[in-house]
Length: 219
Image 1 (tube, helix red, strand yellow):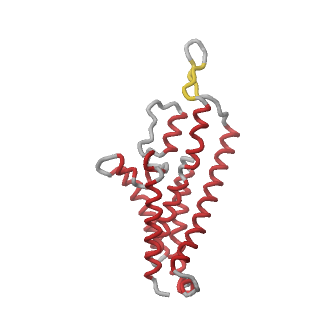
Image 2 (tube, rainbow, N blue to C red):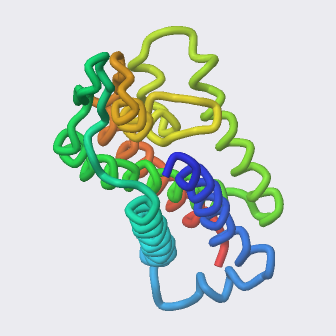
């Protein structure tokens, strides 16, 4: 998941950026806008389709990871071998399973927020290639932004990138879980309090921005 989630996030965000910009580049957006639907319905309809694709893709990723993990690895206690040859459990399998549900469910809202980010960017930019490039740039910016924020963990926690694993490092819940099951004693998730509210705010704001953009377009 630490590898698959960042890839899925980039793919779904860039796909979302093409939803409106692609229609506009092909010249088919005007035909969509003259249909007997208001702009909000059109926007929500397209975004709903993207959300379904996002959730379905994530479900496939999770199922694949669980199947591969269960085939190659045993789910058992993480133990240390003592000098007398006995095993001392550092992390029990029960503890691992207790955290497994939030580990699986945790990335869903951040993924949806990234989907909305791509959708919003594509709604404001007419050219689909430019929308794709701007979306990639924004993803990198808010990810690297975690390293350049001047101070305060809570500030970083308001970025959606703080709640998904990243090749640039980070403290998402999944990262915390991976550290915990490896026996890292100081494993922590400093942004746990913002893991739901922050991505939700991004999701709502991006939907609003996308609707504003669509309302400004001529039919």
